[in-house]
Every structure is written in C-alpha cells, then in structure tokens.
Length: 287
Image (cartoon, rainbow, N blue to C red; front, top):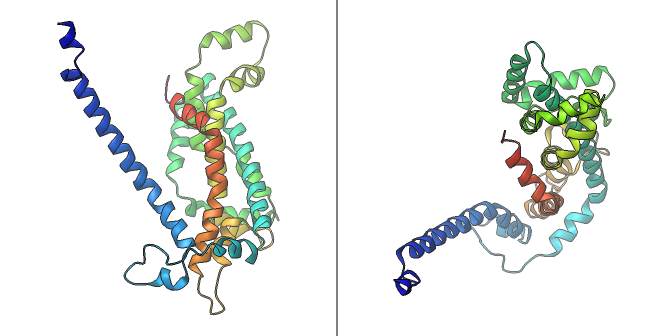
C-alpha cells in the first residue's frame, strides 16, 4: 500500500499536475495577449515609415532602426516635457492620495446622518465621464486665472477621487474598533487617530492609490492639452502632436519610439511598488 501511495502515477498527483499545467498555459497565453500591444509598439518604433504603411502587414523590420529612439528623443525637448509631466503627476498623486484617505476615513469611522446616501452619491459620480465636466471645469479655471498653471491639479488633488475614497473606506472599515477606542480613551482626537494610527497602517492602499493616481495624470492627454500652453505641456501631448512631417502628417515610427520611452517610467514605478499595489488592491476589498 505504501509503494502504491507513493507512485508517481497516483491519480491525485496526476490530476494536480495536469491542473497546474493547464493553469500555467492559460497564464502564459494571457501574458502574451496583454504584452502583445506593447511588443507591437516596440516593433513599430524600429521600422521605417514605409514598413509601417506596407500592405499586407510587415511584421518584422528588415533592419532595426534603433536611431528612431534617438531621433524621437532629440527632435523635441523630451526631458523638459517629461519634467512637466512628472511635476503634475507627483502633485496630483500626493494630494489626492492624502485627501482620499481622509475622506475614506470619515466614511469608514465617523457616524453622521445621511452618510450612506452621500457615499452612494460619491460612488455614482464615478459613472460621469470626464468629457461632461471638462468644459465647465475649464470655464471655472479660466475665470479664476488658473489656465496655464499647475493650480488645477492642486485643486483636483485636494478634492479627492471617488474610486480612491472607496478603496480607503473599505480598508479602514476593516480595522479593529479597539484601536480607535483605545486612542480616544488616551485623549486622542479623530485627526490624531487618522494621522498616527490609521494612516501608517494603510501603506498597501497608499501605495496602490499613489500608483493609480500617478498613472491617471501621467497618461492624461485632454486636460493638459486644454489647460496648458506648449512650454508647460506634458509628454503625452508632445508625443501625440509634435512628431509631424512637413506636410503635417504624423510620423508614426517616431511616435511609436517616443511612446515606448513614455511608458517606461510607469513600468519602472509599478515594478518597484508592485507588492504594495497588489496588497492594497486585495486588502481594500476585505472587511
């Protein structure tokens, strides 16, 4: 019986190995599916304009045009536009993470009449597309003289983001009530409870929220195009509107090369903070 139970042909072990093989096969296929567009973008940045326009599709370049990346970097003030994007993204991501944490703490730990209704309205606001509020927002900032400044992103950051508020609310609602009660007994107010107890324990959600907010702002095209001048514009606007031929048509291979370099900072940030991001997305849904 012992020899039979340890046999590699044991049905249970075979079933486990088959299930694991199927799982790995599905994961590899999904990985290829999601990485496919990025791989195609890299290949597009290594082609000539003629190869990009060829029909049928020219899958691989005859000669890898590595100089496209250097040309894309030097034809515009790449570092200057990247600096503008970085400043705006850091301002917004930092402020909106803190303001969303504060609002989420209020919804999770404070009692007030109509709290559930307000939270429902907050969640419902996530269904509003950006285009609906963009024109009124622009008119308000124009009246206040904030066009072509970074103040719109400061105010947006201070106003919190519904989705991030939801993440923090779910996380804070799962923390033990005893932490809060012990702090109150020691004479600590709710502001102190938030800054000294709750916020330090929420690093997974803080990390996830910061990455999400940073990605939102780094990849935003419409708001910077509408609110900023050319000198203050962001890298996303420059990549999509600067690489044009004398005839006014886009130079697709340079746009693709610049887009690859444009995506690299986001990939690096995610690789560095992925543990906190995954932990924040998983723990914020637990109670």
